[in-house]
Length: 90
Image 1 (tube, rainbow, N blue to C red):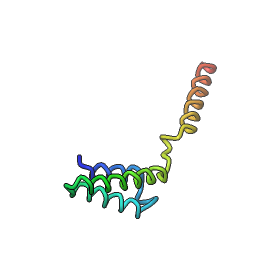
Image 2 (cartoon, rainbow, N blue to C red):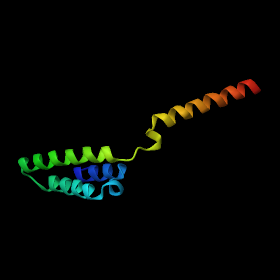
Image 3 (cartoon, rainbow, N blue to C red):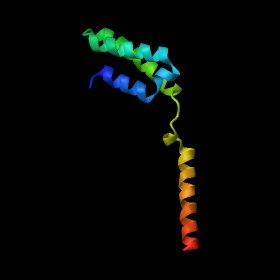
Image 4 (cartoon, rainbow, N blue to C red):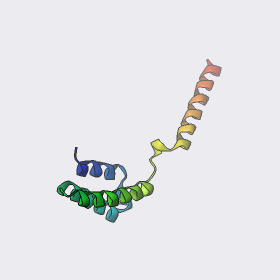
């Protein structure tokens, strides 16, 4: 899997087209420029800019419910309560 595929996959995971479509397009262009270039200096410049944009996109990404610690704690608490009710009733 090349850099373009990896960046495309991460952009999809971050829902970057929804939150920041312009930045997502620039990130993809930078990844394509890196893949097309053989010049180490050009790749380094593109990589630095790509790293910066991807960091910003990660900060802007919506938090998924599965990653929310508060929701995880609430699910664990509800499971313990259900188990306690079963134990008390049976």
